Length: 445
Ligand code: GUN
Ligand code: ZN
Image 1 (tube, rainbow, N blue to C red):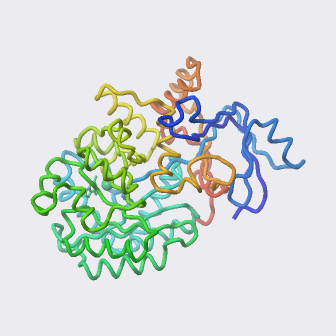
Image 2: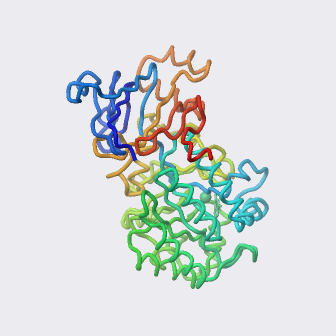
Image 3: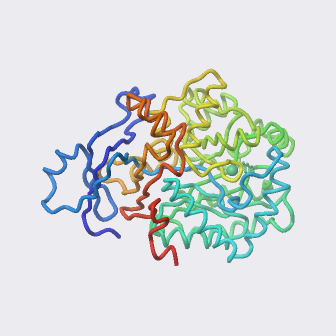
């Protein structure tokens, strides 16, 4: 834990509100020469450097960055750590992709040694891409989640994860039962939920791979533990939707299946939601559920075009997800770039300040964690990134022709990726430095 007060001087930009509520102009704060002050893992002061320095004691330790931008850590509201090893698998859409690539790779996570190796690599990847919080799928094996949390705890990073529940329409080697899935989830909740910065998500894979009996156990767990998350997939692919309606003929929509079993609440996060009706969107809003928008995945699997304006009209909370390994990048910057293109294909614009909101504070709101993370306000946990807007020759050349902050931000989101991330701080401690790789000795060991 950081006990010593430390300060970081650079340009500082962070999102403070949804542009849809307050207008673009009032949705962010920018300090050209800013100072961020951190103590005990929290932000204790932020603002123009000259003003903040007057409020701080003499002799304050200040790290000065030249030509860098500090912003709050990115939030990934949907990702699968066990799919790290099969990212970029060729040629299939959702259901065949699951069968041909995903399930065989997830089988390997029965072995905790392999699972631990991938968990480390995955958490390294998040840090080097500036992602400081993620909502993460494990596999059906409880060990996969145990080792993931162990590794996340060592790094003191705010992660939400859960064991996959899957008791039908999957290979034998990846199936649990309603009883074992319930018992394993319960044991993991008791062990990990709210331990340090970690939180648990009950994680049915999606409606087709759970029996009604299993979905009922999810509802039961949420009743028994009202502050855990519920994390699943929803309405991603047309064939998937047809299949759900065949499997649950008595339900009137895909979302209604989850609703029937009591799975919609304020900590429910549904990945995708591409093909939702107005009624389904309204029901998400009424239950305060959230959607994870996963553009690189939606394009890669040919799933469809997410309708962000429709979600906004209904007031649905939306966060950004990479959905690795259907998603093709760990980088939230790259993810924003693809989100922009998805809007373009629908004759819509995605303003870079809206993107900044979605990638940070919007994600925190989708997870109901905006009192703790999502921007650099005083009192928040000190998860932040130091970005180099001139990281590549092309970025430097292009940035020098950009005149406004908004233009620079748009170039950053169009051309930026992990090369842009210089340093990542987790709870006030440097967790990644592009010049020295992962710095924490405990992690390197
Ligand atoms: N639907 C059910 N499982 C999955 C998965 O692993 N990835 C994606 N993108 N969709 C799913
Ligand atoms: Zn997914």
